[in-house]
Every structure is written in C-alpha cells, then in structure tokens.
Length: 394
Ligand SMILES: Nc1nc2c(c(=O)[nH]1)N[C@H]1C(S)=C(S)[C@@H](COP(=O)(O)OP(=O)(O)OC[C@H]3O[C@@H](n4cnc5c(N)ncnc54)[C@H](O)[C@@H]3O)O[C@H]1N2
Ligand code: MOO
Image 1 (cartoon, protein in one colour):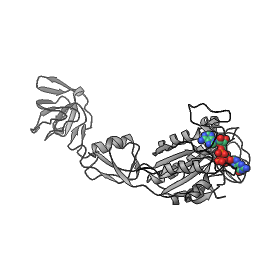
Image 2 (cartoon, helix red, strand yellow; image 1 turned 90 degrees about the vertical axis):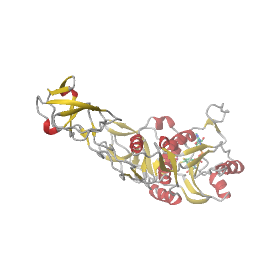
Image 3 (cartoon, helix red, strand yellow; image 1 turned 135 degrees about the vertical axis):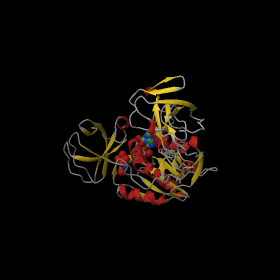
Image 4 (spheres, helix red, strand yellow; image 1 turned 135 degrees about the horizontal axis):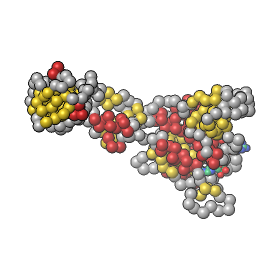
C-alpha cells in the first residue's frame, strides 16, 4: 500500500493541464484564466468627478467664495471649454473634469442662485476627482492561472475584453457499478439500493469546474463494464477522466480493475494506506486518466475530495497541490490511530474539531452532517482535547 501523498503524486504524473479555449466574457465566471489578460484602455480614461457638484480651480476656493457657473459636464458628455478664475462648471459623478479645474466642491457645500454659487459648507481637503488611469492603465495585466470571480468579470469588462482564454473544462465520465443499484426515482427490488455517491460525486466535480457525464450503471459482469467503458471514448468529446465507483475490493464480484485491464488500462497503483478509501485504484486508459473509487458511499466521496478534485484542478491548470488543510484544535480526546491515515468525519464546533462517534464508511447521513474531515496521520498516538490537528473543511 502506498501513502496518500504518493498516490496523489502518481495521479499528478498521470494527468496534465488541458488546452485553452476562448469563451465570451459572459461565460467566463468560474472558469480558469489560461493566459494573462492585458487592459486595452485606461480606467478612468480621463480625470473624472467622484461626486455631484461644481468643478472649480482649487486656488480660488475659500469659505464664502463666489463662482459663476459657465456650463455643465455630465457622464457621457463633458464640458468643452476652459474653467477660468472664479468660474465653475456644474458637474455630475463620472463626468470628465473640464480643462482648468482641479477640484470638485460637492453641491451640499454651496448655495446656488441662478448662475452663481457661494461656498457655504466645509468643503474639506479632498479634490473629489479620480485621476485618469487611477484604476488601471493600458497594458496592466490579470495574471494566469486564476479562477475567474464575478469581480474579475467586471474588471475584464472594464478593460474591454470581450473574449477570455480559459482552460477547457475536464470531461469526466462517472460510472457507478453494481447489480444492486438503481437510479434515484426508480423502484428498487428487494435486494437493491439507490445509487447515491455517483450523484454526490457528479455535484462535487461540477463544483470543481468539470463537465460531467453520468453513464448508465454497469452491472457486475465483464461485458457490461466493457460496454460502459466504451461509452467514455464515444463521439467527438471523449472523457479526460474516467471515474468508476465500486467493484474495487477483493470480492468475487469486484471486477472493475479486471475489466479495465482487459481493454488496455495501465494500472499505476492499487490500494492506499488510508481510511476510508483503501481500495483506490488509478491508471491510464487510452488518453484518459482512470480513477477507480471504492463503492462505500463515504469512501467514494472522501476520495473524490482528496484525489479527484486535486486532479481536476491540475487539469484546469491550477497546479498540482493536495486539498488544502487547515489547523485547528480537538474539541474532545481521540484514540490512537492504526497504520492507515484516517479521515474522520467531524464537526467544527466553538470548542474545536469534534470527531463524530460513528465512522462507518457507509453512513452518508454522518458525512452530510459533517463540516470537516479530521486528519489522523498513520500511527498517531492518542490525542487530547485542545491538541492541534489538521482538518479538511468540506
Ligand atoms: N475482505 C475484504 N472486504 C472488503 C475490504 C477488504 O479489504 N477485504 N475492503 C472494504 C473496504 S475498505 C471498502 S471501501 C469496500 C470497497 O468495496 P468495493 O469498491 O468493491 O465496492 P462494492 O463492493 O461495489 O460496494 C461497497 C458498498 O457500497 C455500495 N455502493 C457501491 N456503489 C454505490 C453507489 N454508486 N451508490 C451507493 N452505494 C454504492 C454497495 O452497495 C456496497 O454496500 O470493500 C470492503 N470489503
Ligand atoms: O476504505 Mo473502506 O473505504 O474503509 O470503507
């Protein structure tokens, strides 16, 4: 059995960043920027008023000073003349500051009669002017790689970037396996259950930026598995990553590795020193990476967080890094750990991280109620409330 770190390294060696494609700006949020973007303009492109008021020469400004209002500057239509001594231009937020003016007095600090204003308020020190290029200048860059946020989209729009180069989404084929499974909504037979982790994993992978195809359930027969595997390489968009669920252990009906090897899968590893998730398997099948997850629902989801999501991030160009861990303190004592790294379903409480009393890898209700996976290293001695520990937020 290899360690979690070793397994992850081998998965990163099997996978590589996908090519870039251009998408319209309105589709860019949540995608990964593949190449740096450079601003195509200065913002603001001119010195702009930050307030509604009057543009004047700062040198003329004093309490009680009087100005003649000679014109108006609005956002979208500036004043073309020059502001001279004791002259003011009515100005609105976002309008270009006219030539000659270097201050804007807000309208609350003046009184106006016809075309005259008198400074009556405490107009302060600020110019109320945003300098040209104060936000960004032509050539300023948004560096790649970067997960594009809604704020980034606003910035790109202001930079006048209508098309954005992003990494292609990884195409993931998810295959649930087992004679006992039916799809949600169907009526299970007496010995059957409803497929669950395939749906949880699909949601997890979509949230990580993948395009996911949930394939039909493969039955516990070599020919059924082969038929479903063939679908992953179908059509113009073959899968970059094939994720199977179940059939990974040592039972008579655990046929996934055998079926995959029969159609050319080159195995990289099988079995990882972790709990849950020991019978994890990975390899290459044609151009695709294949990850065989254990069937126990919690094991499959934990391996999805620990292995599949980092592989997806690697494919997206976000680097080869494990799922981020945080440091916390134990809310209650925990027992010594065995030889496998244990990812305990746990709760984040005001007192610290609290391992759930029930750690069976079949219990989705416990996983769903957990906010974290408490990480217990191999052979960790018993630990006390208040001890520092690593955990993965879920
Ligand atoms: N003799 C041994 N038995 C087992 C070992 C072992 O080392 N020696 N390992 C155990 C561990 S650990 C795990 S994890 C499981 C993994 O088994 P498989 O990957 O072969 O999974 P299955 O047998 O197909 O299923 C296990 C369990 O999960 C249910 N399942 C499967 N797929 C789904 C799905 N898509 N949605 C919901 N539930 C699913 C399945 O019905 C079984 O109950 O092996 C242990 N055994
Ligand atoms: O590794 Mo199994 O995943 O412990 O339940």
